[in-house]
Length: 394
Image (cartoon, rainbow, N blue to C red; front, side):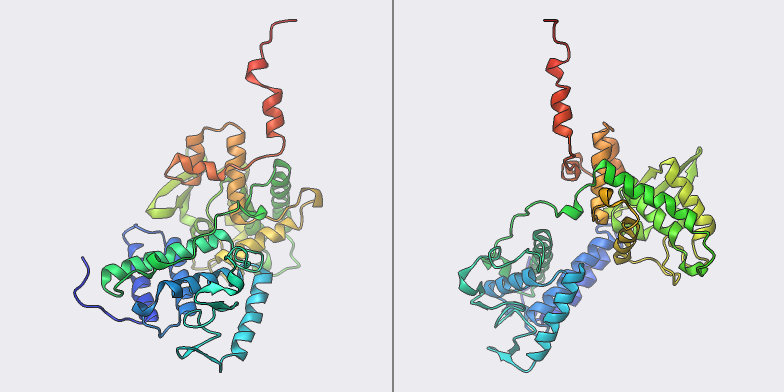
């Protein structure tokens, strides 16, 4: 039931209260810390695009449309090109800081009440009456369809809570005319590597421990063993990148001669995954002579002795990839290596429920999204067709 009186909070005030509530849910296990941070980041983006001082209840469906379109055009900061585009856009916005949009809001700083950041729109629609897809939303310079869908879910959850808490009279998301763009499949770098590509990456990672003994580098700069552990765990066990960087030394234990990793996953769930023998040996070598001394209990440390950040993992993968033969090399993300684990375990006829438990899925049906096509699969299937195996002699 809604409160009797409306609490006219600004967007910034509502965001602070909502993020505090979301983070509190991690204490009960209702949300994982990684998911809570995603919500917090998206809500922070909403504040940036809507304007911190705008009253939340004043936002209309047209304003929400402008925010969604502005986010779609926002450069993807995870890529070098996106970061450069973001800096350029920021410079342009700074140059326009003195210009005011109708309603007294800064045109360069807010998508509401004027023109969306990064593009022009009238009444919440893109210039020329073009759809978000035609206007470049989700193209190389903007956010991907999956990122747009995630942002939409995040702000929808905020407005749903705001309606129940009495911060808005009406949920403006119900009046939004901009529909979510359908995903056109995963980007190539988020798809599974072929067997040759995966083996090339694993081979390069296996060579790294030999270089750890190079005494020409300072000890804090010798990260080869750490990099090998990162690539081998991602490629063979397929954890989420958030699970990898949250791992502590104490999460690894031995039972009956087998090395296990206790992974703390989504929703407070844990799973004990046995490590392949080769991976366990590299891990043991890293713990013995590769991990910097320090008080931090994190498994993976930066050269400064602090827990490795999520963004650093991609740099490690790219560094190891440069050692792979060009014929076997392909750009891949940590999520792409998770797909690699699932795809090759399933292709090798490993029990589906076992693969589900390795990946930490609660539902077996989720595996379908992680099973990518491999070259030659259809040819093999038709060559060994079950109806033709026992043909009677002609």
